[in-house]
Image (cartoon, rainbow, N blue to C red; front, side):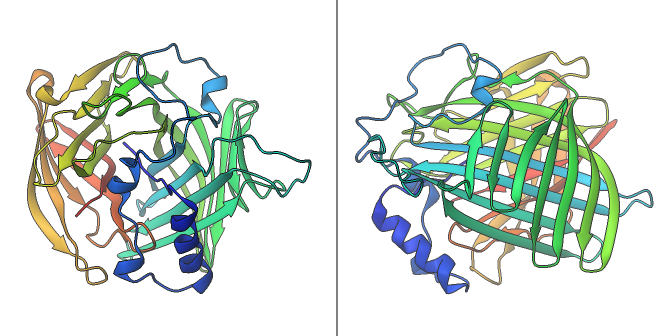
Length: 370
């Protein structure tokens, strides 16, 4: 379950001001993610997600510019030979500012913006490094394509290279240089890739995941260059009117379990903190087969909260996940508490430990709207 929408030139100007100032945004500058994704203004000429359709690969790995919002999401947990742990996130968002075709021949002209978030959790040093970028999809500075697959903004990029993906990002003295290899077939989330998020027409996305990508390469922090291996999770979603007006935020979990299962569950919260009834999830088994979960199949219970010293938000960073039909009762705890993005879109996303009877794992948690 992912996010990001800047729904008017007005919001874009706010964002550009924040990014160009080069300083942390004030609370009044920040944009409410759920409110942005529930906006219904100026959408009549965009396509909307209202019913299932067949997803086609590799075409659907690339951009869908007739929809307003789209994202490509990579998160993973990696370790060195000595057991030093890192979490990472590299995410790209495409936002259409208009559905009208671009006129003229200038390569400067575009109706698309590309945003990206890049983060590394250094568990040993209890530090979280997070960065954000935004640029216009013009002159090749930023963009996305299906064949061969690529998505990029400046020198943050993921590109298909033969049977692998090459992921690279560098900011300040933090760098990722990773190779990702698909180990399981895609999960078509929801009804064959049609993922409903609310009761209204168009409160849905097209959504698929690559649940287990074997990952190897290097993470550099300052003068320390660490060779790492592990697993990554990938999500790709696109939509126009994803959320209903009563939605406040969501809690999204992914996990790679040591018995070969890969898990994703998400609840969507209303303003009063209760679920909107459209939570969703999936379990991918060791052989690549999978089952789709509805909200009645799992229970998410917050256990402990952490208050951000930067934004004052209180996030439930410890959880219990129960999925009775699959004998899963998991305790979920962060590798460190402080894994909050504090730029224009304030939210918590970080590396987590999953533990239960006879099973362990690592994964990620994303929380918005707190």
